[in-house]
Amino acid sequence: MRITVLTGAGISAESGLATFRASDGLWERHRIKDVATPEAFARDPELVHRFYNARRSKVAAARPNAAHLALARLARHHDLTLVKQNVDDLHDRAGSPEVIHMHGSIGGALCAACGHRWPAPAVMAVNDPCPRCAARVSRPDIVWFGEMPYHMERIWAALDQADLFAAIGTSGNVYPAAGFVQHAARRGAECIEMNLEASLNARDFDRQILGPATGTVPQWVE
Ligand code: BV8
Image (tube, rainbow, N blue to C red; front, side, top):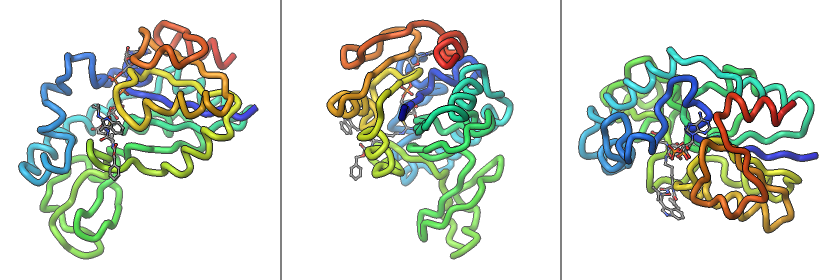
């Protein structure tokens, strides 16, 4: 059976990482447009780097939880495509063999001038010189609002072939990820949602399993 799983901020909540909407639209006390758009970076790159430097240190201190570990086990027995919206690395650290980081990774750095990528230092600054072209417009390798998510061809192909699609810990606010369930359902996949509460696109799923991911996901995987 081919399974495609999409995870969101909720899967890392029990590892202590803030979800995006729990704090009424503020993200670590910032608004999207001030810290997670290309315009924000052009306007105030140091504020953007402060926002990501703070989150990067929280990710480093976090540990994969039972839900991340259960999905790593699932990959050992099934043809699984795991797509994550989060920019943390907890699925990778849990041992998932192949993770599609559609919104990029907080552990990555990107040169806004030449597109070169390298591992991000714990604390980044816009003037960090690019190792390849030496330009000083370094940014986190993260997909901001208004930018095209990564690996979309691979993701659409996985949704086309899925017998089962599961969305875990995502509110269904952010597109194109929020549209994946309709894409999979149209191609005949069974669609399951595992979340703390019904998401905005709950009606597009065949069934819901409500509760904290560290309880529902291991139970579902077993
Ligand atoms: C794009 C990186 C086009 C940043 C992120 C319609 C169609 C297409 C686009 C749009 C559209 N309408 C609007 C848009 C634009 C926009 C968008 O969707 N805006 C929203 C706000 C309306 N989309 C975009 O800009 C995307 N790009 O469309 O490009 C394009 C085309 C051509 C050329 C160029 C461009 C790009 C979006 C990517 C933005 N970047 N992340 C960063 O992380 O700093 S998205 C960000 O939101 C995070 O990655 C987060 O993961 C993601 C989604 O949020 P969720 O994961 O769902 O998190 P949330 O807090 O909302 O929900 C958590 C859920 O977990 C809750 O339901 C909660 O109940 C549950 N939960 C909590 N605890 C637990 C739990 N569940 C289980 N157990 C628990 N313990």
